[in-house]
Length: 326
Image: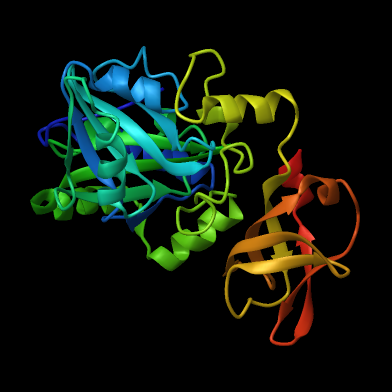
């Protein structure tokens, strides 16, 4: 569970400057991207936390004020609806921040399960500026004592994707310029969405636009770390438990490498003439190849067969990043 941090402007930038020197010594860099527009709602009322506990995959029962954790909303078939970060702002107030830009979809999904519960969900679209801090040292929370330097009212929480940490920062629109200035003073570099897209693909971070859709389930998307196997029932729990218990997961999200950019996405991946998967994302890497993500059938991941896509009328070789499978 990560910590949500909100401190006053009066606190010194000394901590973040010191942390920046440590990061620099370790040859790590920090980057900032504007992610404003992601789904965000607030869930209030005495039954709100219990409701979310019964709807989502992770255990939220011990979430305390000031704490944050990630969880997954799935449908009755165990398919992905949304991956959300849950931040407990007050005893009866939870902030839910999704990966998609569909606040209304998240709102409607939660509302349909509020029947007898004393809970209310409301859109927070347009309330916050949302920045992502990425490309940091793996011990970012220890290395960057950033909380002591943040502007008053900023909410900070982390997303954990396998071994990669991404920090989210939410602040009022009127204070976003001050926040960016503080981060830039700490040698964090403002980038664009294309740069973050390349980063997320290279680090196997799934996207709501490509990998986190209702075509896939959390086990296929390598989101096992966001599932509690002991908390009891939630929407889709029986299906997910059965897939895990009987080893019925048929495909996995993997990193891919190819020589040229696909003309469009998604692209079917073939082994000789058989369809064995789908490429969902692609971006130019810092090297002389294209990096991608895709879902491939497990039986083919265990082989050394040749894979390819058809791009502009020709075959383009596709290689699975085997190190990600370890």
